[in-house]
Structure formats: structure tokens, C-alpha cells
Length: 314
Image 1: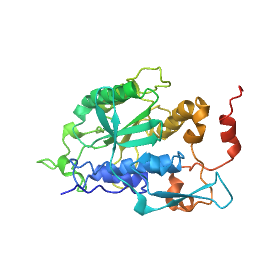
Image 2: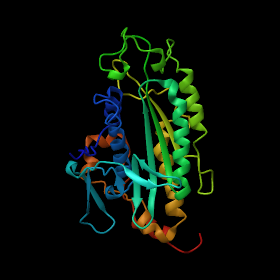
Image 3: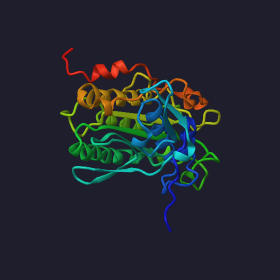
Image 4: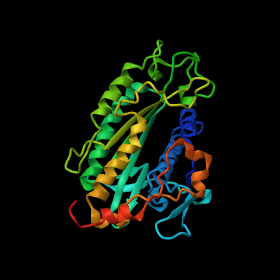
């Protein structure tokens, strides 16, 4: 019997984080983290300006030409076009299935994003670091120009009784959250094991060029998901703080910047294939209420693309 692959949906961050924190289908199938894959895929399309056909999982959008002429691309929400699955990338040591990948025809994978979620047993966070460093090295050996991002998401379990909507794996004999599953202390501060994880992840971030250390990611983010009544599924705003390099607010911006530097500004001969699309502002998808969560990439002028493709020195 073939396995059914659920299609990518256009989803808000809070909804995706709620599905992650509840893990209603368990963790073995990875269904609890799939919505986060979809959220990123949709942002890469609408905000990043990447063609949905180049993104895995394929976001549910359709592109058409605006009647005013070439360069004016209209994007609309098409739920039936959403795809599923992960992309298998050839690494220097082994193949690797990556959660979200953008592949440019004739060029190969240009952006990859891995997501790791932790619901319990936070003492095992250090084990994830070895895996993270190995995966990054493996893919950068084969694709040094690949812009690779890592997003760690943690359920911010607090002391007290296990909430009724918590994953079954968090249930205990006495009904209380186990000490090993706590991300937050009695005083509301983050547990030391999470702080150490944050510090170690910081050392894996910040790769700025293809000649830099292959064991570093271009961008790394860490998110703690609130599970308290009233703000369930929201991002804990004070850790990491907005000024921290691992704050999620900076994550995709860093990925876009590194992509542009490598595949657009430094490769003018390929700009017709690598330039990130700006959508026509009248596009139906840009009128959808979901778009208010982030800023879509809008079409400006063909002149900018022409200038980038010029062979003249400036």
C-alpha cells in the first residue's frame, strides 16, 4: 500500500507551531513538524520571490502573466497545486533528505532548510548538535555555494501538570511534567540545557562565503513555542531576544541576502534565471488575509534586472 503524502498548505506561523506543540498524530510520522515545512515553503515563494515549481515541498500557488506585459507576474492561491515530500540532495559523504529545498534548473540546489523539533527530553539537545554539524558539512562538500539554514524549535514546557492538549509522549504517571522535559524553570527563566544549546548553535551560524568553513550554516534560528493557556502556539519573544543572531525574525532575511550575494550579484550571466521575482501587487494571493503576517516581494522594474546583467564595471 502506497504512503499518502499530505499536500503543502498555506499556513500561518501560529497554526504551524500549534500543530507542532500538540503533535496529535505522534512524532514517528513527522506530521507534527510538516506544517512548519509548509510555512517556510510558502514564505520562500511569496516573500522570497521564488517560483513554486522550484520549491520542495511545492507551495500551493499558480503563476500567470499580467496583461500589462512581460515581467509582471501574478500569483494566486491554488490549494490543489500544493505538493509534499522532501528533497534528496547528494552530499559529499551520503545523500541527505532535506525538509525544504529550492532547486534552480541547470544550477542545482541553491537553498536548503532543515528543521528539528524537540518536544521532550531536552537533555538530549546536545545530540542534535553532532547531527547538525555533520549534515551541514556533508552538503557543503558537494555544494559549497548552497545557502543552508537550520531552524531548531522547542516546546517550552513549564513545571506543573501536563496540559490536556500535550502530546502523549509527555504524559507521566503522576500527571506532572517530568523534570527532563522542562524547557522553562519555576522562575520563568530558560533551562540551562536550552541556553547551552543556543550557545552551541551560535557557533554553527554565520557562514558568509563559499570559501568559509563548510561546517557552518549560513543562517540558524532557535524558537521556543509557548504552550500556556492564552498564548498557545506563539513564539517566546524574550529568548532568544530580537537582537540575537538566532532570532527567527532574522532567519529568512539572512538566507535571502546570502542567496542574492552568491547567485545574483556575483553571477550576472545567470541573473535571468536566479533573480528573485517580484509579484504584481494586484495578485489575488497578495489580497489574502494570510499575507499580512509577512511582507511579500513586489514587482518594481525590469531595469534593475537589466542592470544586474550588464557586463560593465560599476
